[in-house]
Length: 295
Image (cartoon, rainbow, N blue to C red; front, side, top):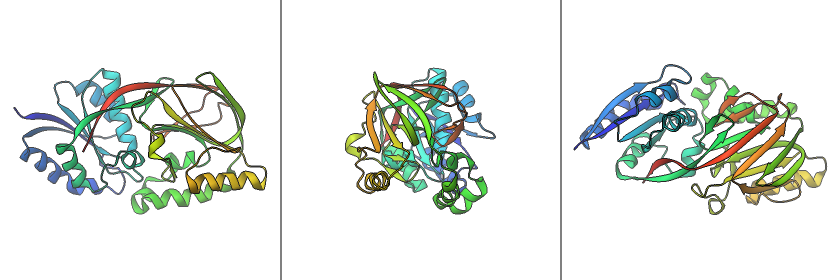
């Protein structure tokens, strides 16, 4: 019996290179006995709503797009109550999530990986009433992921984020926050905070794969205090270069539940997409919420 796939394509992701391979992807799936229903997204939120309403009756949902498109596909499945595996063909500008999972950034190789792979359970996060697949962050460079012009992303890819990050440097200001994680409280002035289930955050911060378990029911928390002394700057640089994110300036730990009290003027990013600020943020781990195809 043929497998039935729901293929969701974001035609605007990254440099739009997936569009050139789309016919080849469908032909590959057909040749392996897969019947494909195709949906091309037309606006923000389209993928989430379409998957929520139409995923039923399919053996797999294949997402072709960037991290934001994958976020929508996951949101559609979880909110719709569908227990259906996800195949991911990354075609965005940074593809942090794919990097964490070891998914090829070669379009056709990623497609072949879906056919020979098997589903594995993966945790996601709930940010108040929204979901995120790999990161919720605030502070330095957070704005870059959603504020970089799409035309710039399409032309320069990840380098576009670097250019926009440099422009943001003069505007970095300390953010006061109180973070309570599994009963432990941290309070101070921070320049960056991230709650993630990934080894790659913002395309520049890389976490040790040995300390990140995608299905352990916990999320990783990274907090960087606002530097005020040369030692603080040294600690940040050392953490960045050695991937040892634990010193007097940089705090790193895992937790199941995280509550954050912070100014509502501080905006967030969820999987690279804008999320407006609020004074109280409740983040919870949803253990084994989805199943992702990994080769």
